[in-house]
Image (cartoon, rainbow, N blue to C red; front, side, top):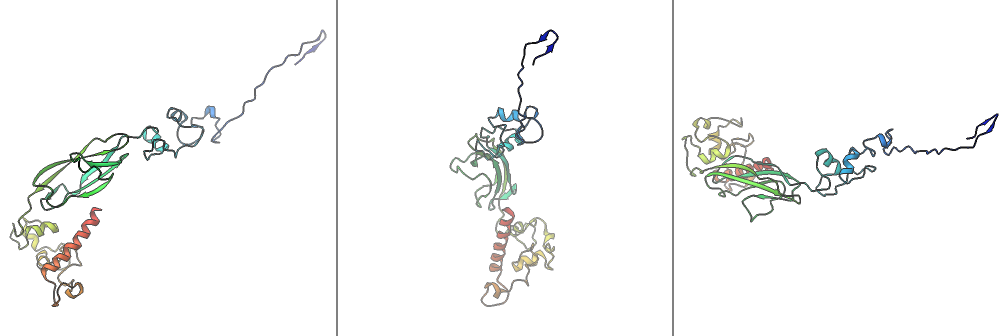
Length: 268
């Protein structure tokens, strides 16, 4: 710039002008200098810088620690995206807290960040998987009270143990009939009746017109309305080559098979 007056012209002087480019990485209308999340990926710039991520690129889907959680999930959960998390046993429970010695215990569990889970006192069986159910075999547990612990392990470390309590009762004798209602205790327990209540012999739990005692004698299922003395012709299933009603032994075997299928569906 130069100024001119009566006394003459001034010396020319200049100034420098820096033109800054407006940078708005995520296009949200906020300059990066005033935007707490420059790339608009849901993770603040300060958190990305602190955890070794790029605040100018959408890296939400990355999983640098290979723990199954992406970076955004790590931010939401408050975990370190660069470090594999300690294994967590998120659920451990029994399908039923009380069984008989001839019954099975069914364990359910689930985990996160784990590669294997096992019963804490069983070094022989290392890998039961990261989720269950798992059923014991009849006779695995003697009568008494059992404390059973599970632990899960992963690259980031082992989970704390979780424990369940299982009560195991002696199974009744095969021919025992405590309440004298004509139905053996074992059969009553198997279909959900009370072996100490004689009145349940007269009940019709599945509303098929036949009492529980009648269904026991016929070898049908007292909890299934489609299973009753008139519903299973022997010829249809090959139980009795001589025709007529199926024998008690064969009919009960069929009902037991059906009940196993139903119980498996409920467990799974």
